[in-house]
Image (cartoon, rainbow, N blue to C red; front, side):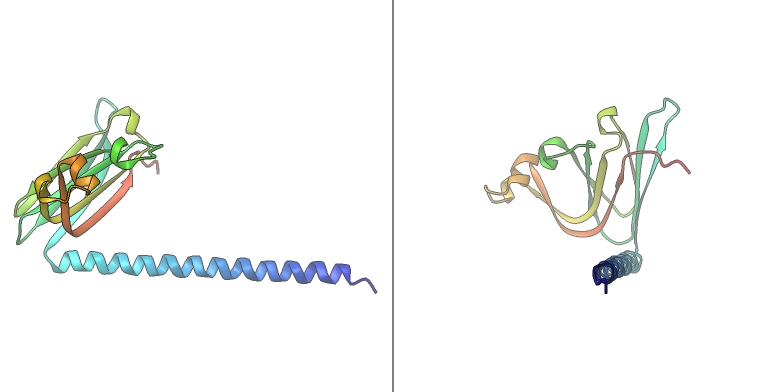
Length: 165
């Protein structure tokens, strides 16, 4: 009786079960992430804030990142970081910005340098902005940028390229 063939199919069966299990875990993680995202969006909506972005090309063919937020009750800060495609050190290689956001609608557009096309961005709404002299001397980010945001209330990220449909 040849048991090698049976052993092969048994091992393949176990391997398939492991792949199915891994696939199920990935799907559960995606579903959980989606529900966390929905909770975050509903908390923004409940707090009277909206936050979104659009990536378009201008008539000259340059990629434009458009950020828009609406704040109902309080002044916030918009922190934006742009990264090139092969970023290794986000602090040194990224471009970092901070803007005060008052009550109402606030929009900001960024023309993306060619070196950053295909890279990524992060944008966040923050309650506070600490100045360099308010941060500990060992806070590398604060010392490098001259400020640090605290109290995140919204976050988005994306890839700096036009999606083709």
